[in-house]
Structures are given as C-alpha cells and as structure tokens.
Length: 213
Ligand code: SAH
Image (cartoon, rainbow, N blue to C red):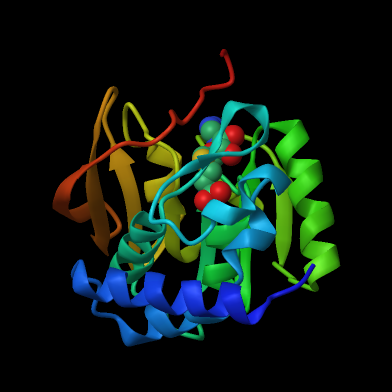
C-alpha cells in the first residue's frame, strides 16, 4: 500500500472541506489528515477515497462518510487517557481515527467476514487496538468495562441498555438512534442511574443488527 503525493493532496482538500462544513476539532482534523482512507476501501473504489461520501465494503456494510466520522469523533471528545469502545469495526477507518486519539481502543464487529478482513488489515498497517472482538454490540464488552467513551457506528433502533451501563461516571455514549433515519445522540452519565441526553441532527447509517437477524 502506498500513500502517494496525489492521495495526500486530495486528503488535505477533504480535511479543509470538513472544516468548512463545521468540524472544528483541530485534534480530530489533524488525526484524519494523517490516515490514508484509501487503505480501508475496496480496491475498485480507491479513487473515491477522498470524496466526502460513504461507500460499500464487504458483507453489505459501508465505510462511513468522512464528515460523519469527524462529527462523531468530535462529539466523543476523546482524551489520551480514555478507554474507548467502538461498536461496528467495519472497514476499521473509524478505529484508526480513535487510535490517533487514545491507545486504549476496543472494537466489536458482528460480521465474521469483516471481522477477519479488518483484523488482517490492522496487522498489515501495524494498528494495535487493545482488542478486536467478534461479537454483538448490543451487549457491549462487559469483561473490559467500564469505558470512558463508547461510539456506535450503526443505526440503533433503540439505545442498548448494556452500553449505558458500561459507561464510567462522566462517561459518554455517542450513538445514532432511529430506524429509517437516525438522530445523532450523546448520553453523558451523571450518576449511577442518570444520564444527560443531547441530540445533534439527522444522519443515515446501516442498521445495528440484533443477533436474531
Ligand atoms: N466504523 C465503520 C462503520 C461500518 S458500518 C466504518 O467506518 O467502516 C457499521 C458496522 O457495524 C458494520 O460493519 C456492521 O457489520 C456492524 N454492526 C452492525 N450491527 C452490529 C452489532 N450488533 N454488533 C457489532 N457490530 C455491528
């Protein structure tokens, strides 16, 4: 894999366009400037890697739009000491962005094909999440909980209770909630049994699948 001058130039333009669209976390933008998104895309789509759009990956899933990755990462407000759980590893691109913000990243994927493919890619790119797990995001990762931050990268028809329970005090969950379209939602744990809820507009994600599907 190669990160050519052309790719780097296109990436710089993409990052500038994200800034124009309102992304103002310089930390998130500088991390995204360093990550070759084309490494995470199917061979045939590499020329589109620096368009601000979602594209198909394996198992009928998608790599999220760069604006969405930036927006969710910004809402998540990751500090270097934070332990972060990602639900929906997919292509691994969002995971790579999280790894630019903290070394303590755990990620969960329920499609076997993607889990294997992306695990292999991480090895090749020398990206080292603490754990990459083949499992169901509805139940989170109880044996590694609690997490300071949890990000869900698929549309959840309802908010999984287990994820709220796996947050630290002051911890945040960023999750798109809804069936056909989703409201970007951020929960902040304010005590054992109470959560603040904020919403940030409408997005479109592939569905968070339950085990029955
Ligand atoms: N962050 C990824 C987004 C991929 S799309 C990227 O940018 O590439 C959402 C991902 O969530 C898909 O890979 C899908 O297989 C996965 N997913 C869906 N339901 C899930 C569940 N219940 N548990 C874990 N992962 C799930």
